[in-house]
Image (cartoon, rainbow, N blue to C red; front, top):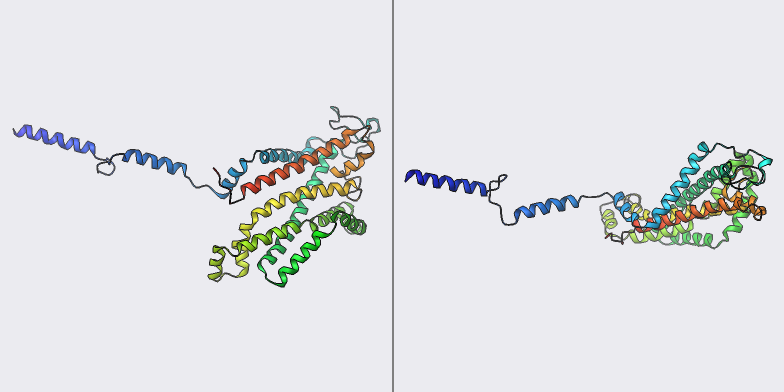
Amino acid sequence: MTASSNSVRAELVEASSSATDPSTGSEPRPGEGRGRTGESDSAARAKPISLAQDIWRRFKRHRLALVGMVILLIIVIGVIIGPWLWTVPINEIDFGARLKPPSLKHPFGTDDLGQDLLARMLYGGRISMAVGLAAMFIAIVVGTIIGAVAGMSRGFIDTALMWLTDLFLSLPQLPLLLLIIYLFRDSLKKIVGPEVGVFVMVVIVIGGFRWMPVARLVRAQFLSLREKEFVEAARALGASRTRQVVRHILPNALGPVIVAGTIDVAAAIIAESTLSFLGLGFPPDIPTWGRMLFDAKDYLDIAPYWALFPGMLIFLTVLSINYIGDGLRDALDPRRVLG
């Protein structure tokens, strides 16, 4: 009897120990195993992502922006490393190869002096891209400063800055660009040289007439953000106006500014091409894309490829930048919810 009771007691102890949780020593509740597995799976799926990763996820949903980014990367890489791969001199004259159509020796053909168009387009692409980026930088800096000052000010300063912005917006930009370059190009060439002088003049003139939309956009952002709760909290804690702008308002207003900057790059490339096509941009020995169009205008009937290839590069570059700007606008818009 004692042996049987001892065996029964041992079986009960063994059954109770097998029914307990080995990690905690307590009995599992119904469905607890499945709950812990689901919690671990949801925790693995809900890993925090950075702001850059979230922007990239939103940007990838814009297919045309991805295509534009790929095309723009190909063009940028081509104009950067292309001259090292295609080592034909841009100023090599060969009258025996004058106005030759595209071939293996000259993939984009030659001009009226027998110069290789591919080499000149790769070289000119650097200048066109540099003009676009430099003019965009000037427009963004000037526009952001004026818009921020106007957005944080009240009364006369805001009114005067917006009056100045409206005045610049009302000016006829192209005739004024032509007049300024015509008056000051030669004097600037004497000071810093022909290439640097023309580059500085074109960049300053184009950037100086592209800051107005940025200023109005930044001002609107500042007027909205300066009344938000987090700015009011910083102001209540004694933050200075400069700290409010630098640490709280400006970082939240950079999204639309970045989008406007991409559009300004495209506008600056078109403006430089327009000035060069009208003969007031870079000199003939500096083959920008717009200058090549200007040189090709008299040979459209016998050498259409001369104008086709630089025009196509201008078109693809500007279109790609505009699509990238649309993608960035969607990716940086906090009102859009990613599904």
